[in-house]
Length: 202
Image 1 (cartoon, one colour):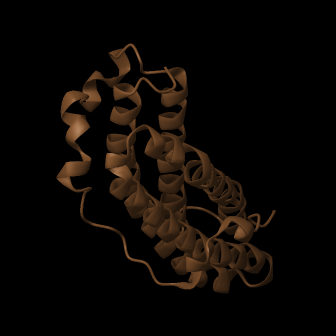
Image 2 (cartoon, helix red, strand yellow):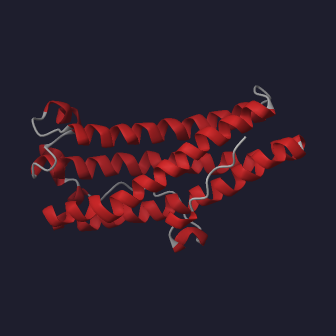
């Protein structure tokens, strides 16, 4: 069983801070284009490019991975899954989520969001909220990574301790799920209308 790769090189200095899940939706003035480009009409819009669909597909993958990790932890604690299977899946799916999210956020923060800001600076306050979400997610991913790697190591050393400490992993995976639920929906609602309105990537 492999440990989850260390993604600290891409984690911001905020990883040591305590973050809470953002509850509030984006301000209404950040959603004005959504009225003209409602979500249900996106797939049929002539400027809905393959690259946009792929970007949203990555979001769907993140949601699915986070849900899988939460359900796996619950099943292990309920003794519906053996320790070795749980550790193998935690390594595989946890590593995929951590590395993919770090890479995705780095690309958005350094390339994608600046492109959107250059196209329509009215929405910079919304982009700043999304960037703050990335910091909260990175901090949570770091805590998840540390807890998960400890459980993976303990599986072969002290299975009872591994089961006990899986509660820490489960807490962080639930936080990741909640953060992604809020963040990805808001990110799509802000970004896709900008792309369609300005015919970017079409």
